[in-house]
Length: 326
Ligand SMILES: [Zn+2]
Image (cartoon, rainbow, N blue to C red):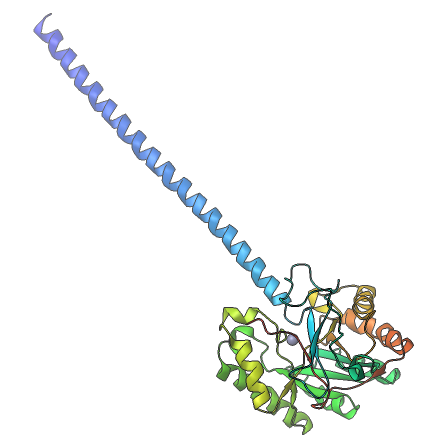
């Protein structure tokens, strides 16, 4: 082998080694990059899945906001001892969990006879006043019926006066109806309650003592903001002289907007078919709940045909309470 040939061979092998190293380097780098991108994609997919799940859970929780709940009815003189459960019914959102101790098999047998056979129905409207308030009042009047309005702060506050002047009852729900805000502490809750109380006082001259917790006393959404807050609040409101009410029949209008009026009527009939008295019906008076207004005449006729009278809730009305879950 000539010297020149040897040098060329050495140069070629050197170049080859260099190229080889370069290729391997690029390959390894590429592989790592690919791995990184893949990892990122997996993480981001995982994040979106978690986020979607969180959102689903949140919307589930938020649907509890006055959604249907199996209830415990406390009635009669001994509010703290007389209680019973009534069956959870089909109006309940399927995504909602069964509450502890609210077995569908237990009937309202522990409720004093005077209450369960009193043939009284308490229609309640939450979240108003709204553009629907006056129409609801008109339908109630036309049918000789009365209802109780658990109000929030809205630009229709002036309708609070119409509620009272037409012989219906006004009660407190919340100023903001913002769970995150009101359920973060006892102070925050009472600050909000005082604010809506002041609005009602200003608009109607009434110092309302009947209240309803946003989401009902059984809500679990409050757990996100403060553990044990409902156990605390349910006691504190009573100490402060308020009387809180849940419901034992839901129209199901909280499960969505535009639910057919016929479906709302069906929900109520289904939930009350075994109840002969002391029924507290949950409905909503908010702009989006137009089908509730549409369903109202038939709801009124239904209870009337069963011999019920329409009553308003006062601080003396035997309470209907859900069990507290937080
Ligand atoms: Zn509400």
